[in-house]
Length: 206
Image 1 (cartoon, helix red, strand yellow):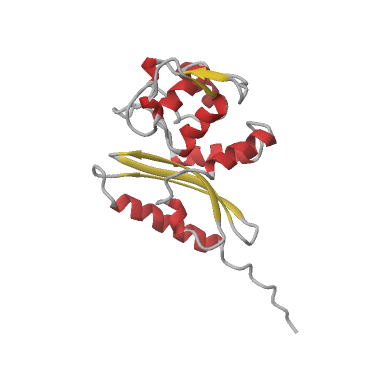
Image 2 (cartoon, helix red, strand yellow):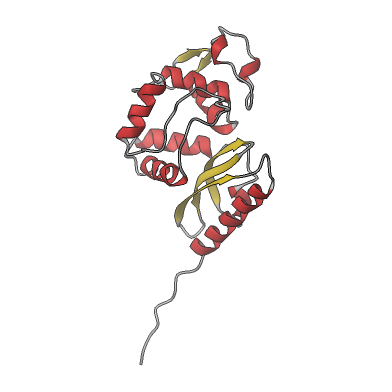
């Protein structure tokens, strides 16, 4: 794992193509893509094949796990490339929130890269979870995760008041149970209502 150039080319290999989300699985092996385009597909449409391409470019699973550990992430572990149908890859809402915080504070990447990441996360296509709990004028940069047994969304919200907060939710569920979607929306709404409260005005005493 190290620095990469967003304009460098990545080659799609047949072993990287996997089912699930995304359209790269249908493309011809040997096709080249700009790294930035692959990263956008990974984030915005949860393209599993794009994720596998980036895992390889960044040095593979072990290199990434070492990097995660150096960032203080102890439950965030890659054990398999995607689609990981057995659920061996792990993380936690707290660690994802901390990771978002570190990115936002510029502790992991440059400010320019941070702004690029946030911009891409604002283009996430699935907007049926955290975004549904937000009021008018609020914006969110977020990333969803969907499995039959798990639903997740982690995002950074900006309010019209100037406040910014991070919310991270992971819900284990019976297979494809839609109640998990509603729970995430309710958590988002409750969190939004809390942070959107007007600041108390100072009381004056005579």
